[in-house]
Length: 308
Ligand code: BMA
Picture 1 (spheres, rainbow, N blue to C red):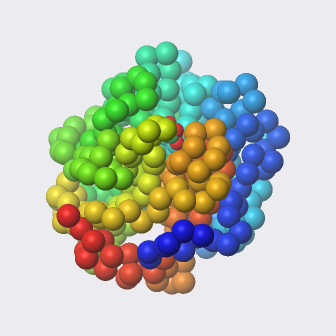
Picture 2 (cartoon, helix red, strand yellow; picture 1 turned 30 degrees about the vertical axis):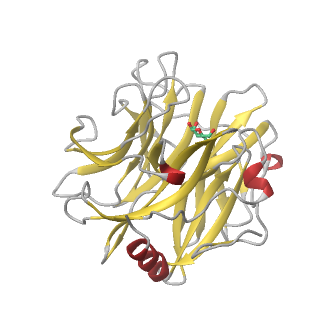
Picture 3 (cartoon, rainbow, N blue to C red; picture 1 turned 45 degrees about the horizontal axis):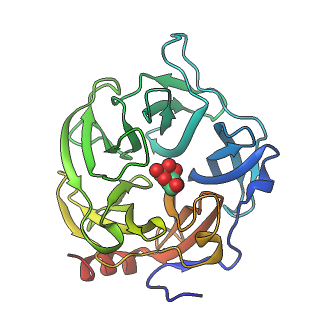
């Protein structure tokens, strides 16, 4: 076991492996929300055809999951609004009584962000893709900011993007997105090549707590790690603190070895113990899913004291 700072990995990691879904080649970067009666999620499954599909799953404790073998389908009567067979890296945000789902809805033109809403994870309404191609990471804030929907997004290229700045944008109606503001980009060390937003930001008195991935280029290729930032509550494009030291780095065998080696990809966060603990769900080596937990107070202290 490598040194850990504030996050402790769950001893039973990985918690979800491809055996959870019959047609899965791998199951990884996935979206999870916590409800009064348990947990719900949309899971990224890379199928044995190498189509990338999203599957709904449920759990009572957030650790043992039942995941549907069939993929979900977003719905829209307009044939130009559709879910592609390369749908991956979902995020879920609950805002009022609606779940907002963003994912990478890639087509022949490249990675593109898809947007859908649901109230029950049984029927889904797909909206226009909110951003132009190419963009690979997007998440909606859990409340309106200054009266508008708000998101973080990360423009990309059509390949294995070698850059990555995270931006903030707002919308009055979920269709028209604008007022793009730069939030954070690559800096040094483990985050010297690119960044991308992970789970939706968590509102705290110290600011929006954002977990994000940072990437550096080793002799063997990209290495994906997790860091965090504190964003201003009213003007979230203003970064107050941002980790210079990583919070999680691929050090365990299940993070180092897989379809894409050396990947820790945070994509969901839940609050446990009456909000005192944050649990991160993350994709490991593009193959399976693990979790790690930390005290919220300790994370905030760490971000403040290990910032640039
Ligand atoms: C990114 C995304 C992620 C993936 C990562 C490492 O570009 O495609 O889904 O985990 O690469 O392969």
